[in-house]
Image (cartoon, rainbow, N blue to C red; front, side, top):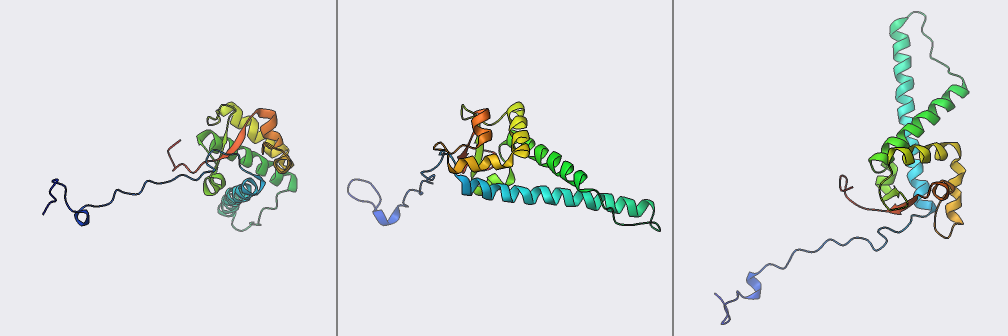
Length: 168
C-alpha cells in the first residue's frame, strides 16, 4: 500500500533515531564542588591501593615468620611518604591516559593550555604540585576563570567532558 506519490504511508515508516545531545556545559571549566568530589573519590582509590600494600606486607610477614608475627606498625612519616608517592604516581599515570577514576565518574578532564590531554612532563609536574600544595584547589572558588593555583602555574585547566571511555 503506497500513496499516489509512491511513498509509504506514515504509519509504515519508522521515525529517525534520536540524536544524542551533549550537555551544554561540555568544555566549560569545572568548579570547586565537582573537582573536590572527584578528588574525594580519588583519595578513596589511593587509600585502597595503600590498604592493599599494607595487606601484602602483613601477609608476607606472616608467611615468613608465623610464630613471631605481629601486625606491622609503620611510623606516620612512612605512611605519609607512601601516600604522597602513590597519589603522585596515580595522578601522573591517570592524567597522561586522560583522567583519574574520580574525574571519569564526575565527567571532568584536565587539559593543557591548548585543550589537549596532558603529556608526561606536564602531568608529572601537576601531580607533584597537587600533592605538595593540595589547598591550591581552593583558589577555584575565587578565580573568575575557575583555575586552581596548580592550573595557573602550569597553564592547565579542568573542563567538563562526558566523552565515552576511549574516545580521547
